[in-house]
Image (cartoon, rainbow, N blue to C red; front, top):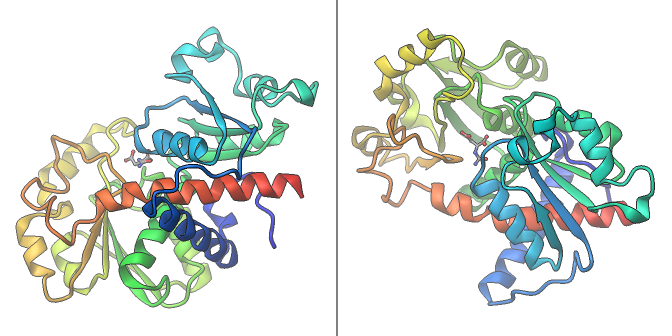
Length: 326
Ligand code: NCD
């Protein structure tokens, strides 16, 4: 069995690791469905959830997963404000202390779940850490655990991870989810990707050249209505107002809001194809990229997707802990 010590980027999630983790996640899911609430995979383990950026689903589902597996969790409400980062401490120093690099038996935690606003932060943390680091979102570059739970969702919906068409819609430049997702899916045969973004918020050139080099079929378009009929999955993301510096790009998005939203019209257009609509959440209440009138319809899957965070993160934690004992 392959080891998974740190989980930093989606490229680490090779098809064999994905299969192993998704099989394990499915087994956790079935046990939870049957009412089991106590597992022993992480008995005696302390997990630190270190979030320098806001989070609802990622943090809570990781913490829930940890408790279910028998771990204890130490945490701070907002690491940017309440940890020593507010006093100017570097990420490296914080990680060295929590992971007990000086005296491992006196470490504060055995696994660190890190969310940070800077690209590459999880990588920096992993370089100095004495314990496994799991990237729960770094800047606009990576969110590998979300990519994995999305893969679990697609497999549930389609029964496979190969030979399907996925359209990514919205602010694709700043979405770390789309970036990780594209890396993960690029390893599967026959996955066609379509990217629909407003001017200035298109997928990054590095991702495009990576996909071209790998010979992955992809297209770009400017309106969800052009592609929804051919898409098995339509993956919609919000416009990342917290990261966009040039407001002209935000205005370009807002001027053409309907081109990047699941409206009643879009939902109806995709009836025959049976397109599923996914979204990592949060949905922006102002932009409503998933319109309220469709959000409860059967092919909109974002709430199921969010729930899958629990078994998938249980599988990740169990695997990471097992790998570090080998
Ligand atoms: C995403 C994130 O934080 O990158 N949310 C999540 O983890 N479910 C998506 C987002 O913020 O738009």
